[in-house]
Amino acid sequence: MARDTTSDPLGNILSRIYRSIVPRSIIPKTDADRRRTILEFLVLHMRPVRVRRSTLRFTHTFGLGGMSLVLIGLLMASGILLMLAYDPSPEHAYQSILSIQDGMIFGATVRAVHHWSANILVAAALFHLLRVFFTGAYHGPRRFNWVIGLGLLIGILAANFTGYLLPWDQLSFWAVTICTGMLGYVPVIGEWLQAFARGGTEIGRGTLVLFYSFHTTVVPVVLIVLMAFHFWRVRKARGVVSPNPQDSQEDDDTEKVLTLPHLLVRELAVGLTLVAVVVLLAALFDAPLGAPANPGMSPNPAKAPWYFMGFQELQIHLEPLIAVVVLPVLGALGLVLLPYLHFDHEMSGPWFLSKTGRTTGALAAVVSLVVTPLLILIDEFWLQQVGGAGWLAVGAVAAGITAFAVFLSKKFKPEKAEFVQSLFILFMVAFAILTITGVWFRGPGMALVWPWIGGS
Image 1 (cartoon, rainbow, N blue to C red):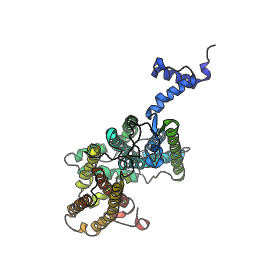
Image 2: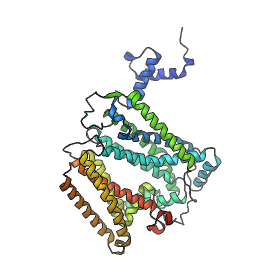
Image 3: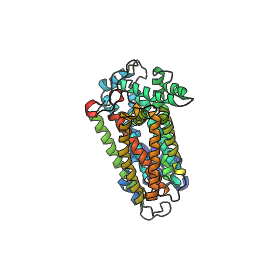
Image 4: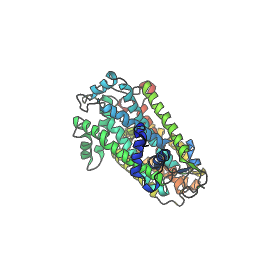
């Protein structure tokens, strides 16, 4: 008797899929075998068949890569819903946001999910990069995947920045005005870059249409392509780096467990928890929306988005060319070239590499925590009153970094990876303090204030 496939439409669909991708010589006979084969070919292909038990420890990776994937999925799902009601024109953009929030069932919640997913995604991607760096997981077969990850981070920042303007309120309008204005400091091509980013000479209709087009088409496609490539490279490297440096992850099968269920069940639990947290935040806190954009009246203070606030704070203390061109370019170049430096010993596995790495890293963090706020205060209340203070500050900072590097080398004799990690922590903590200062401690006129007294 012929089997009635109409009673099992899912099985029929899976059967057709698997017949198109599985060689006839290994076609299973039963439905259960058939579905298992499809699972192995389509789902488990993203992960190694077996992974080291030690890599399953949550504190080794904190699930940050999977979290980023879940957040991108939430962004795309909520973004598609928002696109159905959003009008990308200066005349109607703000009103369409109001209509979504106030006139549609769960409209405010969907927009809040989009908002919180976007901001948490930036943090998750940054922490994921730090996890990879601090466990030395950029050596060997993972070198190029580090570069792909940097591309993903840029794509995530681009997604957030292009979406920041779309509400067309005062907050977003002037934040984008400030950020695109920084492009004008690029030598030779600065004015051209600024005009390209704005879709014209001023922030207006061309800017909104350009940002909307990139936000809804170009950036999502780039993210999907890079994510697929990134996960494939992780698969080729047989999973994340082991926390035990003595392990040979590529060859030794001891202490390995099946990806299903051990890894995938953990990923599912973390993903569902994250979705619950985002929905809870969306239910409790609406996405911000200020007054309608007014090109003739700038808010005081006018600030960049929080993830670019460190550069705006730098611009207060250093020459604009140094703050928004030289330092970002050198930082990006250093991160791209990092895996390709010659290391005598490619240290990877445990957090902060080694005991010496933990010691020098902690020292760098403490020095940066003490010196950076002190330099901000000195510049705010003294150096800015002196002519050429920007270049004087650059010289003082360069001399201090050089002295610290020499001290590290002579006192601790770290390996190159430990030395690079210490300098990275020094810069990272300093930039984090600059960001915190700009976000919470800058008030009207970008003067230093206590947030609970006169902050924005």
